[in-house]
Length: 318
Image 1 (tube, rainbow, N blue to C red):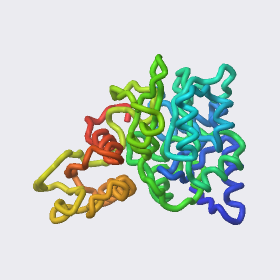
Image 2 (image 1 turned 180 degrees about the horizontal axis):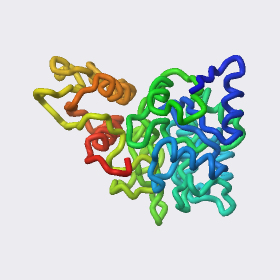
Image 3 (image 1 turned 60 degrees about the vertical axis):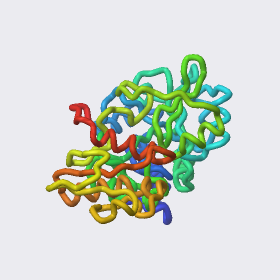
Image 4 (image 1 turned 120 degrees about the horizontal axis):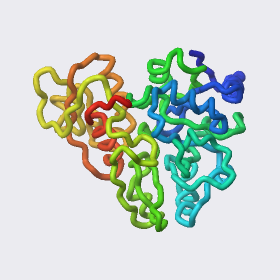
């Protein structure tokens, strides 16, 4: 797998691979995305193939600005407010495709909606402009596995499956974007907790409806078993049992923690370290993982959402 360095022509070389129909992983502020030309059915199919991703799970399309997004989706008033407030940033909106939307239906998993966002990462925006087409870009990892927050994570998971990775350093947020869709009556619905807190979203858009996560969502990343390490996961653990590795949070869990997401109880630090910690447990070849309680507030909701999916019974689609 080639590592494209942004300087010395690497960015343009990576963009040329995209235009040729190949796949390139690239950094965003959330996690590394596996980019392919969203206008090209074959390129989108390659994404599903590289990830081993279930075809019913839609992909997020990345664009450089809201003007470009309007070519592909129809905004309502609340969506306009959310985009103006949080784009570029860690928010994905699920909106109706425009009547003449050229984005591959494979990217929408056959649905009439499209998940779209403008990433809040300078290099990602430069890459999108250099590619000169929207990029379908789920997390750059095999489906159901831990999401990548460094180029090394991408290499470990997708070596031999894609053209390369555009080096962008470590991801600042470390969990995927929050996903907001809309009910039939136009009310905003939180489809997936993520890198922007529910509190911040509601401050901009008013109350959000809750979505029932039954594995059939129009939102990416909503299968019940997802983000899973090799070892089975036990949640809300208060003690470390024989044979377990312990993932802790906060000073109280420090004495028994093999890895502590944040000794000081900082949820932002914990979110940024989550996937790296799970990757490290895989490297350690642990057989069982116990996870201490994480508060269900702010970014804790996104962390717990990922952990619940990691702990869910493994599905043959993952």
